[in-house]
Length: 81
Image 1 (tube, one colour):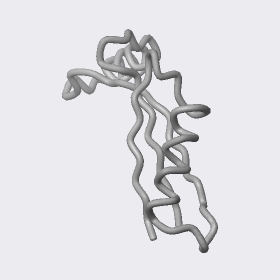
Image 2 (tube, one colour):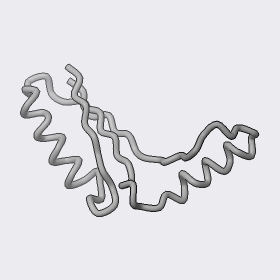
Image 3 (cartoon, one colour):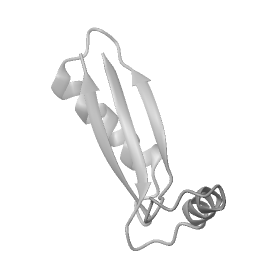
Image 4 (cartoon, helix red, strand yellow):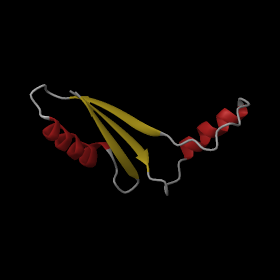
C-alpha cells in the first residue's frame, strides 16, 4: 500500500519560490500561466498488513506532526492499494 502526501502553502501565504519560477517561465517566452505555486510531495510505502483506515490514520498523523507546518501549509493524502 502506498500513501501520497501533497503539501502546499496555504493560499494566503506568499510563495516567493513560485513567483521566481513563474518569472522564469515568462522569461522563456511563455505567458500562458497566470500563477505558479510550489509544494512538496511525499510517497510513503506502508506495511501490507495495515488496513486502509489504519494506514490513513497513521499517514494523517505523520502529515500533521512531521511533514507540514500547519500554520502555513495544507496537505492532501491519497492512499493506493
